[in-house]
Length: 378
Image (tube, rainbow, N blue to C red; front, side, top):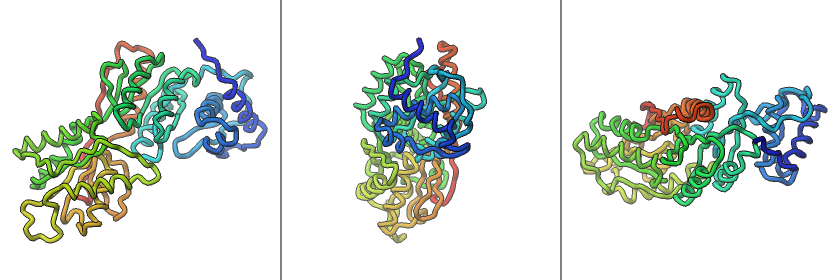
């Protein structure tokens, strides 16, 4: 069944197409952003995205994460451009997050190798937009989608699960596993990440090691915490609950990504008793190191430590997870568990292709592992 393109999408596509063909937008010229076009046409970002997807299918424009959309051809395609794109969609929150951008890059690289067209849809921090895109995949005329969600609370996860159960399209989840829904997923091995990060600190002779996380109800965070606990148990160390903070909330802000992590770090130091000393006196019971659930939480903890007069790693060693390329304000380089995000995107593409072609052969869960990259903070 081939879906009909909505009239608004058709009208905007026709106008944008004409601008390319008549030279209003020259070859290799960058087009206005989808936000700017949505304002011009008084429509939603989703409507503009669908029109741009049709242009990309015709070979008139090329859409690249961070680089924007540019004109690659001004030659008219045959009349009545197809609405059946035969493309794969990738729905994700924001390219401002290094790990997500690298995941999209891996997905597109895999698609290019097979000659498969890709429709990329960015949702920002708006869960309602994520849900809308998933519910209206038929309007993009794609064959299936990889979905990298940004779920902030359990209620959103329940809503997402209902959408996926009722979806007619093959969907693969990236960095999220919802068992029993029939959606294959590819995700980081969180247990291995938490375990490996903790083992890195234990190998330095440290014993008083804490754990800090937000979004603590999420399964991926639980796995990282369990890996941390397992490494301590192996070493014969009982975890101190004062040095473990599992905050259930997550308030993503791509414009000021360290605001919430710094506040969480400040709260962590109030809880961690006794806190790490500035001097070397009476420090036999002090906190020595912290495993953070991701790099942003680690960066926030470093900022909070600085406000207390603590020097990293002299007074406290800190390890992040993701290795997202985050630049620390202090100029230090963060020790982190490196996640091969490009591989995550590539494997997600392969799983989607397999699910579309031979659905019975697709494993329900694929995990990828990384390694510790030791830098300045340990």
